[in-house]
Length: 233
Image 1 (cartoon, rainbow, N blue to C red):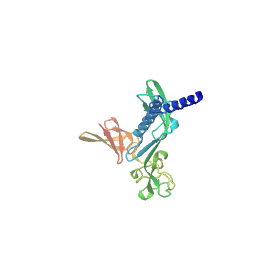
Image 2: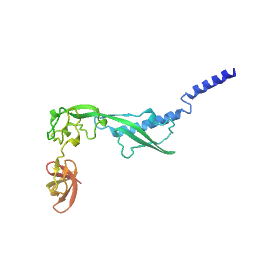
Image 3: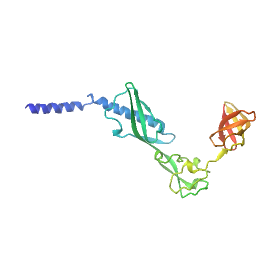
Image 4: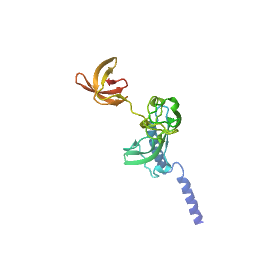
Protein backbone atom coordinates (compact mmCIF):
# COMPACT_ATOMS: atom_id res chain seq x y z
CA UNK A 1 0.00 0.00 0.00
CA UNK A 2 2.83 2.41 0.86
CA UNK A 3 4.48 1.88 -2.58
CA UNK A 4 1.16 2.51 -4.29
CA UNK A 5 0.64 5.72 -2.28
CA UNK A 6 4.07 6.99 -3.31
CA UNK A 7 3.28 6.29 -6.98
CA UNK A 8 -0.01 8.19 -6.71
CA UNK A 9 1.78 11.14 -5.05
CA UNK A 10 4.36 11.31 -7.84
CA UNK A 11 1.67 11.20 -10.54
CA UNK A 12 -0.25 13.98 -8.79
CA UNK A 13 2.92 16.09 -8.54
CA UNK A 14 3.61 15.69 -12.26
CA UNK A 15 0.05 16.71 -13.13
CA UNK A 16 0.30 19.80 -10.91
CA UNK A 17 3.64 20.80 -12.48
CA UNK A 18 2.04 20.70 -15.93
CA UNK A 19 -0.64 23.26 -14.98
CA UNK A 20 -0.28 26.86 -16.31
CA UNK A 21 0.01 28.28 -12.80
CA UNK A 22 3.07 26.22 -11.89
CA UNK A 23 6.40 28.13 -11.47
CA UNK A 24 7.70 26.54 -14.71
CA UNK A 25 5.31 28.74 -16.73
CA UNK A 26 7.37 31.96 -16.39
CA UNK A 27 10.28 30.18 -18.12
CA UNK A 28 8.03 29.46 -21.13
CA UNK A 29 6.80 33.06 -21.01
CA UNK A 30 10.40 34.29 -21.02
CA UNK A 31 11.23 32.22 -24.10
CA UNK A 32 8.13 33.46 -25.90
CA UNK A 33 8.98 37.05 -24.98
CA UNK A 34 12.44 36.60 -26.52
CA UNK A 35 10.96 35.09 -29.67
CA UNK A 36 8.45 37.95 -30.01
CA UNK A 37 11.09 40.63 -29.40
CA UNK A 38 13.48 39.23 -32.01
CA UNK A 39 10.69 38.68 -34.54
CA UNK A 40 9.28 42.20 -34.21
CA UNK A 41 12.77 43.73 -34.35
CA UNK A 42 13.63 41.93 -37.58
CA UNK A 43 10.27 42.56 -39.24
CA UNK A 44 10.53 46.28 -38.52
CA UNK A 45 13.76 46.49 -40.53
CA UNK A 46 13.33 43.80 -43.19
CA UNK A 47 10.31 44.59 -45.36
CA UNK A 48 9.81 47.69 -47.49
CA UNK A 49 7.28 48.60 -50.17
CA UNK A 50 5.46 45.53 -51.46
CA UNK A 51 7.91 43.13 -49.83
CA UNK A 52 6.59 40.48 -47.45
CA UNK A 53 8.97 39.38 -44.69
CA UNK A 54 8.75 36.32 -42.44
CA UNK A 55 11.03 35.34 -39.56
CA UNK A 56 12.01 31.78 -38.65
CA UNK A 57 13.54 31.04 -35.24
CA UNK A 58 14.34 27.44 -34.37
CA UNK A 59 13.03 26.21 -31.03
CA UNK A 60 16.57 25.23 -30.04
CA UNK A 61 17.81 28.80 -30.72
CA UNK A 62 16.26 30.08 -27.48
CA UNK A 63 17.65 28.67 -24.22
CA UNK A 64 15.30 26.51 -22.20
CA UNK A 65 16.39 28.32 -19.04
CA UNK A 66 15.77 31.80 -20.47
CA UNK A 67 15.28 34.40 -17.75
CA UNK A 68 12.45 36.89 -17.56
CA UNK A 69 13.24 40.52 -18.45
CA UNK A 70 10.84 43.45 -18.40
CA UNK A 71 12.83 45.56 -20.89
CA UNK A 72 14.34 43.44 -23.67
CA UNK A 73 16.66 45.38 -26.01
CA UNK A 74 17.25 43.62 -29.37
CA UNK A 75 20.15 44.78 -31.56
CA UNK A 76 22.08 43.68 -34.64
CA UNK A 77 25.70 42.76 -33.87
CA UNK A 78 28.38 44.23 -36.12
CA UNK A 79 28.40 42.62 -39.57
CA UNK A 80 24.86 41.26 -39.32
CA UNK A 81 21.86 42.36 -41.39
CA UNK A 82 18.13 41.84 -41.01
CA UNK A 83 17.96 39.54 -44.06
CA UNK A 84 18.70 35.89 -44.68
CA UNK A 85 20.56 33.94 -42.00
CA UNK A 86 21.39 36.35 -39.22
CA UNK A 87 21.97 36.66 -35.49
CA UNK A 88 20.21 39.10 -33.19
CA UNK A 89 21.61 40.16 -29.86
CA UNK A 90 19.21 40.74 -26.97
CA UNK A 91 20.23 42.70 -23.86
CA UNK A 92 18.50 42.87 -20.52
CA UNK A 93 19.55 45.87 -18.40
CA UNK A 94 18.34 44.49 -15.04
CA UNK A 95 19.43 41.89 -14.21
CA UNK A 96 22.20 42.42 -16.78
CA UNK A 97 22.60 39.67 -19.39
CA UNK A 98 22.97 39.34 -23.16
CA UNK A 99 21.88 36.55 -25.50
CA UNK A 100 22.58 35.97 -29.20
CA UNK A 101 19.73 34.29 -31.08
CA UNK A 102 20.16 32.94 -34.65
CA UNK A 103 17.25 33.46 -37.02
CA UNK A 104 16.38 33.40 -40.70
CA UNK A 105 14.53 36.23 -42.43
CA UNK A 106 12.80 35.56 -45.74
CA UNK A 107 11.86 38.59 -47.83
CA UNK A 108 9.44 37.90 -50.66
CA UNK A 109 9.61 40.41 -53.50
CA UNK A 110 9.76 40.69 -57.29
CA UNK A 111 13.19 40.43 -58.94
CA UNK A 112 14.54 40.37 -62.49
CA UNK A 113 16.11 37.41 -64.28
CA UNK A 114 17.70 37.27 -67.72
CA UNK A 115 15.06 36.10 -70.20
CA UNK A 116 17.80 34.61 -72.39
CA UNK A 117 21.61 34.48 -72.44
CA UNK A 118 22.79 38.10 -72.54
CA UNK A 119 26.15 39.27 -73.82
CA UNK A 120 28.53 41.92 -72.52
CA UNK A 121 27.80 45.32 -74.03
CA UNK A 122 24.08 44.71 -74.58
CA UNK A 123 21.77 47.57 -73.67
CA UNK A 124 18.89 46.16 -71.63
CA UNK A 125 15.26 46.61 -72.59
CA UNK A 126 11.99 44.98 -71.54
CA UNK A 127 12.32 41.75 -73.66
CA UNK A 128 15.68 41.02 -72.00
CA UNK A 129 14.29 40.23 -68.56
CA UNK A 130 11.46 38.46 -66.81
CA UNK A 131 9.96 39.28 -63.43
CA UNK A 132 9.93 36.51 -60.82
CA UNK A 133 8.80 36.54 -57.21
CA UNK A 134 10.66 34.81 -54.42
CA UNK A 135 12.92 35.12 -51.41
CA UNK A 136 15.32 37.89 -52.42
CA UNK A 137 17.16 37.52 -49.12
CA UNK A 138 18.57 34.26 -50.47
CA UNK A 139 19.74 35.88 -53.72
CA UNK A 140 23.11 37.58 -54.32
CA UNK A 141 23.50 41.16 -53.02
CA UNK A 142 22.50 43.83 -55.50
CA UNK A 143 19.82 41.75 -57.25
CA UNK A 144 17.63 44.07 -59.32
CA UNK A 145 14.03 44.23 -58.10
CA UNK A 146 12.51 46.87 -60.42
CA UNK A 147 12.49 47.23 -64.24
CA UNK A 148 13.64 50.86 -64.00
CA UNK A 149 16.89 49.64 -62.44
CA UNK A 150 17.71 47.77 -65.66
CA UNK A 151 16.07 49.73 -68.49
CA UNK A 152 18.63 51.37 -70.75
CA UNK A 153 21.62 50.10 -68.78
CA UNK A 154 24.59 48.38 -70.44
CA UNK A 155 25.89 44.99 -69.33
CA UNK A 156 29.57 44.89 -68.42
CA UNK A 157 29.63 41.07 -68.55
CA UNK A 158 27.70 38.16 -70.00
CA UNK A 159 24.73 36.86 -68.02
CA UNK A 160 23.38 33.30 -68.43
CA UNK A 161 19.66 32.99 -69.15
CA UNK A 162 17.46 32.38 -66.13
CA UNK A 163 19.85 33.95 -63.60
CA UNK A 164 19.14 37.00 -61.47
CA UNK A 165 20.30 40.35 -62.82
CA UNK A 166 22.56 42.25 -60.40
CA UNK A 167 23.76 45.82 -60.17
CA UNK A 168 27.44 44.80 -60.36
CA UNK A 169 26.79 43.33 -63.84
CA UNK A 170 25.95 46.79 -65.17
CA UNK A 171 28.33 49.46 -66.41
CA UNK A 172 28.50 52.49 -64.16
CA UNK A 173 27.40 55.51 -66.16
CA UNK A 174 29.02 58.67 -64.88
CA UNK A 175 26.58 61.55 -64.70
CA UNK A 176 29.45 63.94 -63.96
CA UNK A 177 33.12 63.61 -64.94
CA UNK A 178 36.03 65.08 -62.99
CA UNK A 179 36.91 68.52 -64.38
CA UNK A 180 33.56 68.88 -66.14
CA UNK A 181 31.76 72.20 -66.00
CA UNK A 182 28.43 71.59 -64.30
CA UNK A 183 25.28 73.49 -63.43
CA UNK A 184 24.86 73.75 -59.67
CA UNK A 185 21.24 73.95 -58.53
CA UNK A 186 20.74 75.26 -55.00
CA UNK A 187 17.20 74.80 -53.80
CA UNK A 188 15.14 75.23 -50.69
CA UNK A 189 11.56 76.01 -49.62
CA UNK A 190 10.14 78.28 -52.31
CA UNK A 191 13.33 79.10 -54.21
CA UNK A 192 15.90 77.73 -56.65
CA UNK A 193 19.23 79.30 -57.68
CA UNK A 194 21.51 78.14 -60.50
CA UNK A 195 25.29 78.61 -60.56
CA UNK A 196 28.15 77.15 -62.55
CA UNK A 197 31.14 75.26 -61.26
CA UNK A 198 33.69 72.55 -61.95
CA UNK A 199 33.30 68.98 -60.69
CA UNK A 200 36.25 67.94 -58.52
CA UNK A 201 35.26 64.25 -58.59
CA UNK A 202 33.39 61.90 -60.91
CA UNK A 203 30.02 60.48 -59.85
CA UNK A 204 27.14 58.43 -61.16
CA UNK A 205 23.55 59.66 -60.99
CA UNK A 206 22.48 59.97 -57.36
CA UNK A 207 26.01 59.84 -55.93
CA UNK A 208 27.69 62.66 -53.95
CA UNK A 209 30.10 64.92 -55.83
CA UNK A 210 32.27 67.91 -54.90
CA UNK A 211 32.06 71.08 -56.98
CA UNK A 212 34.13 74.27 -56.96
CA UNK A 213 32.09 77.36 -57.80
CA UNK A 214 33.54 80.27 -59.77
CA UNK A 215 33.88 82.14 -56.47
CA UNK A 216 36.25 79.41 -55.27
CA UNK A 217 33.80 77.99 -52.75
CA UNK A 218 33.65 74.17 -52.64
CA UNK A 219 30.25 72.51 -52.20
CA UNK A 220 29.07 68.92 -52.05
CA UNK A 221 25.91 67.94 -53.86
CA UNK A 222 24.19 65.08 -55.64
CA UNK A 223 25.13 64.35 -59.26
CA UNK A 224 22.34 64.18 -61.82
CA UNK A 225 22.39 63.26 -65.50
CA UNK A 226 22.95 66.12 -67.89
CA UNK A 227 25.82 67.68 -65.96
CA UNK A 228 23.70 68.93 -63.06
CA UNK A 229 24.51 68.92 -59.36
CA UNK A 230 21.79 69.45 -56.78
CA UNK A 231 22.72 71.21 -53.53
CA UNK A 232 20.19 71.43 -50.73
CA UNK A 233 20.01 74.38 -48.35
